[in-house]
Length: 339
Image 1: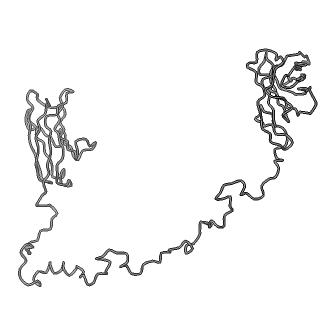
Image 2: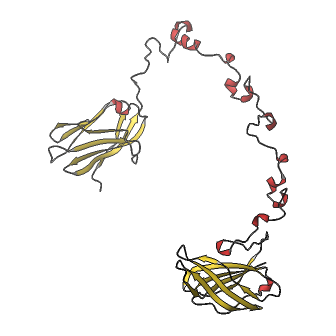
């Protein structure tokens, strides 16, 4: 059950309203608030009274709440929400809650008071009603009004501006162009509609290694890359292996290789296929080791018969800063064919 009393207050907008309440069992309150909102869930108050500012203690345990004229003067007639909340020793209680209903005021502070004319019962000659005559003289007669004043139609306006109906009548300050002046590719987006198309991709001449994002281009040609072999793992020196297709079916072969004991030591070489040739070398090819003064030269050759590849020499010769050398076996990671 709620611990408050519901009570609706009805008052004239802009009037003074006051009421009292008594709290038994205590001498004085710590806090007291009378708050009014448009809606109960609003964040802002329309007005609020507090202890010492609109709420006064008239006697022991008795208090008076005063709603001043300025609190409701600017509010529209209607219903508003209010509550009365008190506090003592850290405890808060809402003791009153309800609707504050404002009714329209008849007597307004700034209203014009007519002392010489009874506007509800005008009698006598119109010339004797001087204030009414002055008001009527300030009004325009219907015959003096333009036709648009009563129709509200654009067609009844005079001196209307000339509104262009064609884009050709406008100033083309944005440099718009007509579709007929565009090239065909502007609307089709088709490569075949371009003029002066290149006839050769000479700007792609040279060879970019696959491990650097290459696509097997050589001497201006752009070739398609096919994977012919990939090792399941690089854990030792590569023995002979089989390709998925004969290298004689391709123009260029690319080989990725690695030192199986040092995976950071790896390289890539490409070579062109020659008809009738059955042996190819992977040298010379330089790769950089961990140190800036260490390089390696691949010294490996292999022969093939169809798709079967046999290593003849699987060595990678390393040169260090002290000019010492050591042989290392190589392992093939994958083989690509380009055609």
